[in-house]
Image 1 (tube, rainbow, N blue to C red):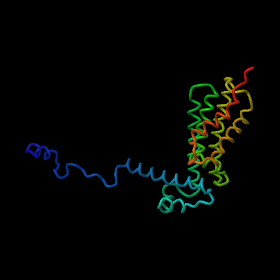
Image 2 (spheres, rainbow, N blue to C red):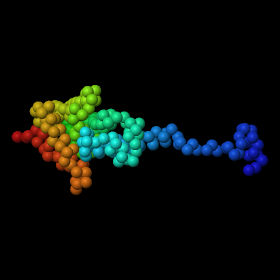
Image 3 (cartoon, rainbow, N blue to C red):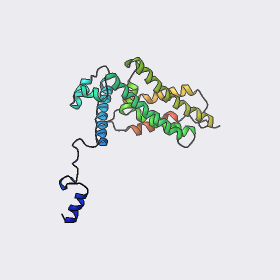
Image 4 (cartoon, rainbow, N blue to C red):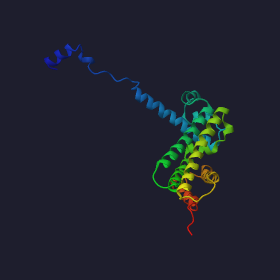
Length: 225
């Protein structure tokens, strides 16, 4: 190091041995938050898959913890008790459905086009982990407060589907009919893959969703004389 460099560091009150701060072994705040989020997601995903495979009642948090080689208190740390874990799982699935509905409603095209777009996403989500948990979970498994929250979120999805149907009827792309009955019929049919779809099967969920929606919506357009 030259004399000029030494004098410059002396002027700044710096010592050559401490000019570069050591990196903290605990990482930055952003890194710690990302690590925590990743661990929380891993716990939640393990729990929802076990709930779907075994049922909520037959699954313990000890089972979930054991599958990840962690302790039960670790699950409490990241997610809370078993009821809270289940509510988080179904809330995630319903949030995905809500986002899909909002995206379809904001997309271009007539009511039938937008309804079909939503139904394809609806069916695909229902075959994924968190959507599957929504269908396989009865509100009787939740606390009174949790059950009311669950029902309120489900009503929002039902309202979205009915709105898309009503807009299709209004613009003439969907034949006039009972929008409530039609929504129940479509949702009822699309909910069943949550029970019979095999993720390891020959058809992926997007393909199954597209084919089911084609079948279910084939008769919705007004008939031309």
